[in-house]
Image 1 (cartoon, one colour):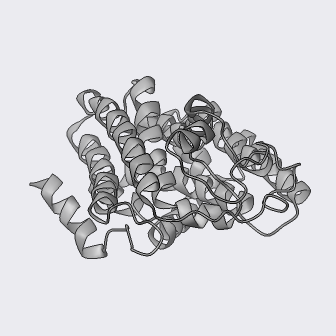
Image 2 (spheres, rainbow, N blue to C red):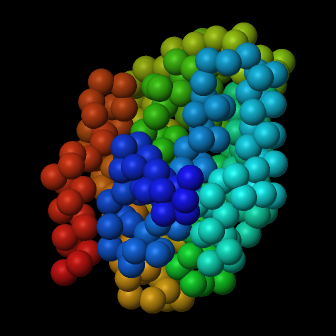
Length: 283
């Protein structure tokens, strides 16, 4: 496979799989757009392995094999993007660490515990991407990644609970009086992936709404701090990042408008709404 063919493939993956990424990178120049797609495709492969149906030991082996590919040229598009833009290996390796953590841990005692996870699965993407954008503001890239991951966690409460995962901090669940089957299970699931963790039954309730309002305030605070990254970016890179942020902020607004009923109502933006965010940013 040629480098051009490899870039074509990661662009196809991004267009097919990315819910928000594909809209944000529309505004980037070709070289940067393809490099960001290469990062996304790598992150997508990590997620697909960690969330798949294989036994946990097989998942671990495949994730470590994927990490090893960072040291060669097998990931052709990503290797070329790293050479062009100086994307740090450590940021990409953190994504693998996050995938491995999902195999071992299904509960987070406090937000500090959850933040460490978010720094791997989302902060790693942010730090990888700012190398492409041309900024060295690693701290705010990490914070912005955490903000977007927190919004994902809120949106996907039901989906994650069906897989036996509860990312909402345990101490906050207790503080707001949110109860459900399995919420007090140990953080470690015995290395069995989803198996053994058990599905979690959560429901929309006044207590759940108050918990989610608290989560929304935290996500918005991280988003505001992370968006200070824009000051260090060129115009088109800043437009890309602000588009990402606008899409996620729109999802947060939708959740709030639905009284945080993430169980029965869609909190995802339509294609038309996403294009509207892109258009507003362009204007």
